[in-house]
View 1 (tube, one colour):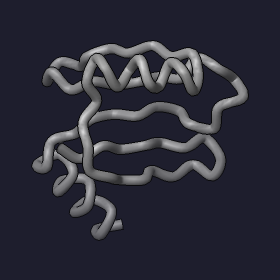
View 2 (cartoon, rainbow, N blue to C red; view 1 turned 90 degrees about the horizontal axis):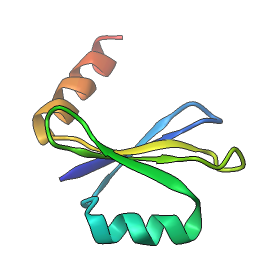
View 3 (cartoon, rainbow, N blue to C red; view 1 turned 60 degrees about the vertical axis):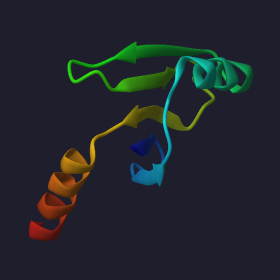
View 4 (cartoon, rainbow, N blue to C red; view 1 turned 180 degrees about the vertical axis):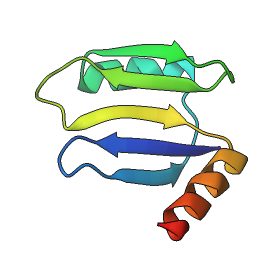
Length: 76
């Protein structure tokens, strides 16, 4: 499943392949304090709570959603 990593500065999104599981949240917690939530589609989102972290959020997305975002970006 694709993962979007949204950076604060510069305000860009990076896409990689992977999953955010409960065990992964513990690994993220070792790097920075975080909040892990699940959206309406059942995809996990990790939100760093540290102001020093340049990551706004890390979110699982479906391939369909990723394709939709790519098409919208190409239209712009």
